[in-house]
Length: 250
Image 1 (tube, one colour):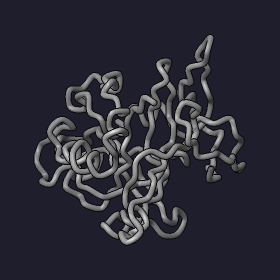
Image 2: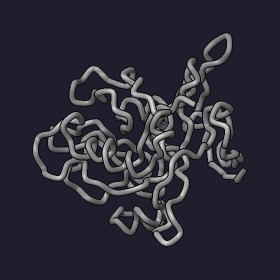
Image 3: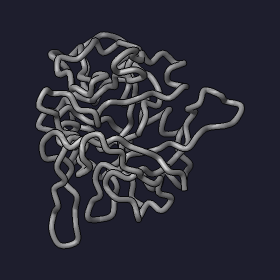
């Protein structure tokens, strides 16, 4: 198994709810890790999905990532965000895998009607997963819907986190940033047009959330500093990364 490193920070509020055998255990900290700030935790990429724990990296599905199509698609790495009582794993991609507008036109939209939702549950889904893998992806994620019809996930196989969920699972630091929410894009995503930063947040990218912004022509996103930008950006922007999320039932 490959060894991967993830930097975790102890800053922030109560994070991921990890379901234990006898009681729920709350893991405290930005990025939901007990590791102290500045430490590096080595996490193995799990091949046995049933053994995965919150914070583990797993591989599931394949997608072009190194921007070299001659060597085929690469395994997708996912961060286990929550492990449910039934064994289901709520996961989000480690990297921004591609670039898409939230909606191809700047018109009034919702998550239910946007072209990004259609792309995730169509082109991406059919490209990234085999028939056997598709059978393991669950639509049992209606708990993910918020009190707004604009953000309900409509029992999607693949979706994006909302601004409420991303704050719940990866809590803000005192200044509103969160290192655990920062994201790098793949070489393929960069070639497709994902904007990446230089300087203090070198290599980081912005990534879409499924929540709307200050109106229905803007969508919320996470910035290069890990901050959630509630006002959002125009839905037809074509330089924000995509970090799919889903529930896998091994």
